[in-house]
Image (cartoon, rainbow, N blue to C red):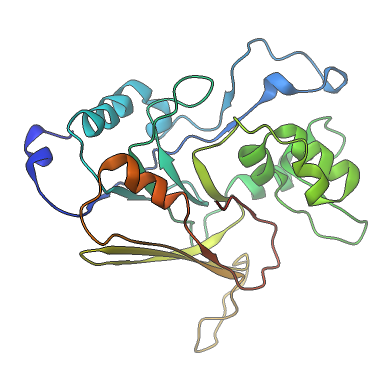
Length: 267
């Protein structure tokens, strides 16, 4: 638990290693078209996962509210155990409640443990009416892609539109802008590792994604990569909490060609 002495440390950046993630993943089932199944019983979102900080919302809120109250700037958490790559900002609440980020989080993917994409690919029935929210296959000879990335980042209607049109740009015209304003990157199919480089005035986090590790690769260089993405931020001096977060939201992604479907948000 965070204690008051932390607030008196005068540093440019505070980096916290967290065994489990804080970022919320949610899907807007309240926006499900009526012809696709039973009506969602509330006007709220469906939370994905409850075995990390997402399931301890009051306690997570205490920590984030403490950081806000004590004006702890440059707060970064580095986490794992989601079996996926993810990056975003942390707020005690998300829309339609007050969205007020106070920290940044990076979540690394698993090296080999399966995640949500594999679970959906191998267990979700082919005739399930909600299959397109989790998986998409844009042609008969194409591989399945993780539509759940799109559902988490932009809302389920965007995923349904992608399956219907096959056009990512057209699909994004049906996004829900309140679904995930806190997320900058999600890839639930991603396997690999992360490299963190931290200095006094800069932080760089590189997501290194490998193809699904079904077989051992004996090559000296460790085998092929699916992609490398670098999130970076330079802080020239101590910047108050809110300005630092806004700077992060303008982060730049460096992308190499990738065989998997990812959804990123850049500003």
